[in-house]
Amino acid sequence: MGQTFAQKVLARAAGLDRVVPGQIVTVRPDHLLTHDNSSAIVGKIEKDLEKHGLVSTELPIIVLDHVIPASDEKTATGHRKVREFVRKCKVEHFFDVGVGVCHQVVVEKGLALPGRLLVGSDSHTCAYGAVNAFATGVDRTEAAALLLTGETWLRVPPTIKITLAGALKPPVSAKDLVLKIIGDLGADGANYDAVEYHGDVASLTVDDRFAVANMGIEMGAKIAVFPFDAVTEKYLAAAGVPRKAYEPVWADADAEYKAEHAYNLPAIEPMIALPHKVDNVKRVADAKGIEIQQALLGTCTNGRHSDLRVAAAILDGKRVHPNVRLLVLPASRAIMEDALADGTIAKLVKAGGVVLPPGCGPCLGAHQGALAPGERCLSTSNRNFKGRMGCKEAEICLASPATVAASALTGVVTDPRG
Amino acid sequence: MRVWKYGDDINTDMLFPGKYTYTCATADEIKPHLLEDLDPEFAGKVQAGDVVLAGKNFGCGSSREQPALGLRAVGIEAVVAGSFARIFYRAAINQGLVLVECPEAVAAFRPGDSVTLDLAGGKVVVAGKPYAFPPLPAQILAIRDAGGLLPYARAKLEGKRT
Image (cartoon, rainbow over all chains, first blue to last red; front, side, top):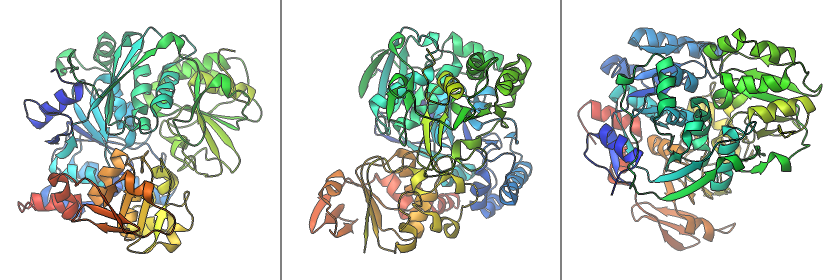
């Protein structure tokens, strides 16, 4: 019997010949991602760090992105504490306020590589499966222990195989595909499991794969991963990573799966997740006319240059509906530079968009773009939980950049196909 | 002893709102906001020894650890649920919070029923009737029994593995 991607990566990371689903293995991750929460994480182990030191200066990747620029004295003090830790312990991979959302930065800087094992103190760490990495979320305490010991335990997950056929028909996008999958499988449909994407993945760009892998956690998945191919190689080469720097891993043809699903991409339609669960998914065609007061374009799910371009093409020369606030949140500074250079940002701003600094912004409700009771936001982000944008009497719906742009023009949920 | 009963897919935003994630980290900062958007009564009335009972996929969503840290800090004896989301499951072990995965016990519970725990015997007792739940693997139990991951890691670093 062959092995899945997860079995192969975890066997290597544990120094074993072979592992089986359900087995608990001790592993040493290649990287540990933390963000603004680094200040709380380091706060747990200040004395331990003095005594034992940081286990490796190469292990941590720290990105300040969640509440940036600092919203008040308390968050500013947290950021300062992180910078002090970075200097004192000589952390090699540190990205200060303004570089971008952590998940985008990790992939963009070539720190998530095919076949590698990364853990992050953020649930959307699973996004790096876009570039064939095994990447999964942990909590703050685990991150603190990892800074001291460099090791943790993982249970080898069973794997769900999802086979894609054909190509999506624009303006239908990868976001519509992943919403469709989550709606079908449910919010716990892949809990504790790995999800492997097979089949005609070549038509999906790394940006597309990123959106799909990023939302793996919304069906409970430990990881959501794509195979390495020419698309991945080209992306990483552009990020400055030579082919010899990594070893891709993929499942054997006769690997054993817990479940298998198939999706016909040309048949996927624009989809929307209605409040307050990500698996409350409907066709946009069946949700048309729902009023919105805010439209959020961006985040770690859909804040890439290609996403902004799709929206800008729809909004070009027009004006958002007077009842709608359009917030634009590029996922990184590099993306913002590209979107400035080709006029994408200008189109969005002329249409009425408010550009926010590359970070997490309104997605987690800590600052910027919070909602009032009775308001509704249509967002390209990944979560629509009650209270997520700062107010439990507000609603959040999730959709693709094209659907968000088309709806921002009309003030109601609108099918981007017209 | 009071049983706090909730439904399926209780996410970490409902257990601890995201807007406080970067300003509240200690137990004292977390406690007043525990379950704020799910059950505004909880934070004021919860007492040590109480039990939280819920449906499937408890703790889904964000990796924030304030829900697990807070539930442990207010003295919740155990969270009994149909199933747990994986990051919350890890966070609970890392905080030393007891989780019991037992959909049968959750289905049997009726308002007013007592819920007691026989951790050593691997049973949760609902209205006098015992329901068995699978034990944690020894390696993971060792973390919880050390009082959480940091005490466990410290002992390991000191070469006194528990």
